[in-house]
Length: 390
Image 1 (cartoon, one colour):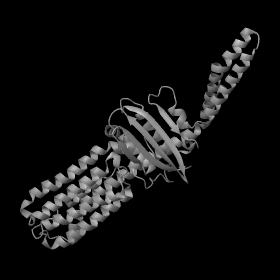
Image 2 (image 1 turned 90 degrees about the horizontal axis):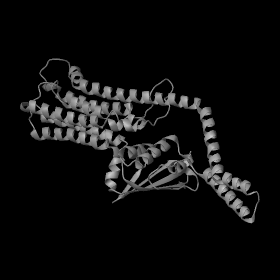
Image 3 (image 1 turned 90 degrees about the vertical axis):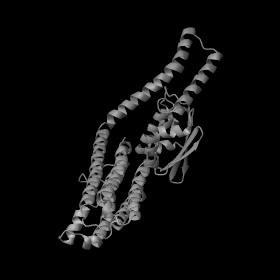
Image 4 (image 1 turned 30 degrees about the horizontal axis):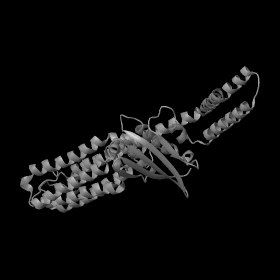
């Protein structure tokens, strides 16, 4: 599922993140996130053990390893589906942990670090920032990587007098920062290229959709006409056939005519007043009993992103292989310029298990709404979010 706006002129990606333009794609990147966190910590541990003879402060060395582990935990936890989106606070939390690890690593080998080339802070920091690539924009990743690079550069300048290789001080800085900068640029490039490709695809798809609008109108008109014919065949045609067969009109026929007219009018009015959401949830074949409370027809003001996210959720709820849902109730209420939506779901199993099964759908809803709240009872989930009226 992709949720994106058309790209800016010139084919350049906007400031959005891969997680924003393709939430489900970001879910698929979770193994990469776990691998990045683990790889960064292993690099730090292995390099610390190999340089054990250079460690002058075991406590600082241990603190550096804890800082790297903390950065990995922040990365993995913040990238969890039910915590989406991956915010700037999480990005800077990872960057802060990387900077702290670099400072503590330098303190751990203060006075006994003859070479800069075997320092691990730049590599570990770059790997952690590489794990952020599916969740943040290129600009954010570059800013975080640049901040960490400044801290590590200062550390190297402080350590420079103790290095034994007779080269200019700038060379020490270049050697120390190259792994970090290379991995940061790689992460930012991935984010930028991914967003540009998705936004370009959405732009082309929108063009094809506009080109087929006329054909769609004809199809919809035929569908509406067929629905009206179905109503007539079910109510009106049998009544007139019976009149023709009897050859006369009695008082009971007049009463029947009024009943048929009232039924036909009620059916047509109800169909005209129903929103797209009510029609879709009342379609034949749906398994879960559903109630839609929308007297002001607010569902018709939903944008395409919200409609797609909502329908993905309702399709999952109706799938017995995903969750064991018992009932669904949707309430839409206007609140000034916004619309509040409350979705009540009852399950035959525990709500915790249902929440885990619906995690991809909830992630998409959280990303498109920005204020999704999930209340959980033993066998009941209540989802609440809002959106601007269009």
